[in-house]
Image (cartoon, rainbow, N blue to C red; front, side, top):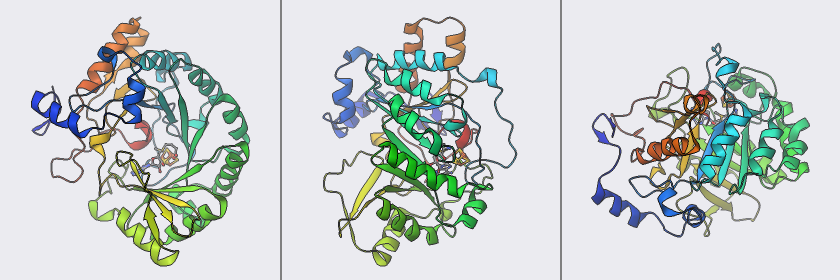
Amino acid sequence: MGRRNGCIRASRPGVILDRMRRTDRDSPARRSAAMTPSENRLIDSFGRVHNNLRISVTDRCNIRCVYCMPETVEFLPRASLLSYEEIARFVRVAAGLGIDKIRLTGGEPLVRKDLPKLVETIAAIDGIRDVGLTTNGILLAPMAKALWDAGLRRINVSLDTMDPAKFLELTRRTGFEQVIEGILAAKAAGFDPVKINAVAIKGVTEDDVVPLARFSREHGLELRFIEYMPLDAGNAWERGKVLFAAEILEILSSRIGPLAPDPKHDPRAPAMEYDFLDGVGRVGMIASVSRPFCMSCNRVRLTADGKLRNCLFALDETDVRSLIRSGATDEAIASALRESVAGKWEGHEINTARFIKPERLMHSIGG
Ligand code: SAM
Ligand code: SF4
């Protein structure tokens, strides 16, 4: 089993038992995985049950967010992307191992042709109970209804600012109005809630916190702030540039009104949820840096070129595409997935000197 600068990533029996005690056996992941025979479940050496697969359908994007992509970038050749048939085959195998929740992402997933077809195929796979999408929203307005009709039920739209000039600065492209139209079209198509993802960068996005919250409260959207993570193209990330969840809460409570943690909140969920005490709206904090949630992580990721990653920050990958294209059996693909999960490390080490930034950038991993 691999090590990251001395950090043991996998099996140590004493640790396993200890971790299993800490992982709630009644979590939705466990309940769902309980339908899968135990020898088949995706359980890592820390007792974490994996039921959540994030699939990147492309590394391409129609904008260039400064914290994610370089201005000029060489995209993967089309032939190296998994086809929809290949993705669906992998999802069928994964569903047999207890994966029941899928999120499509990218790059920008809506730039890939006929995405609703993929949604429809995945939503119809036995065992899949939830299909979600994370998008920048630019192409969403004309596609929202087709996505809903295809079976998509969860949608997150990324938007960091309500100021069109700042949008241009952060994304290096125009498109603010299309994003707003996309959000409203998603609501009209039936998505409820529509979640808004905003990256939180110190010295950059403080002024956007309140306008985003006001817009979200006005339109019944669920706003989630994501602490800036070291997956940026320019290697500009430093811990001191992260606008922490606690600071955002302070801004919101002093400028809009008090918030209280959601009493029904699942402490294992990545986002900490807060409700405005006036009853209008809620805000989520994905505090990947100030409050890592690795010990409750239930996710694996498939990149657009068919590489399986057991962590956003993983330094190695499993080549699923080669397996699929060389005629591997479902059992061989399942074994590769089991092995990848079994080898998952305890957690990212962003807050330590041991942290090593993965070579892949966010847009080519699939956030
Ligand atoms: N293009 C789609 C979008 O922007 O929603 C999906 C892919 S994008 C990589 C997924 C999410 O990752 C977005 O919400 C984006 O804001 C977030 N993201 C990208 N780079 C990030 C970084 N360095 N730190 C934190 N979040 C980041
Ligand atoms: Fe594109 Fe999403 Fe990355 Fe922005 S965050 S550059 S929209 S992939």
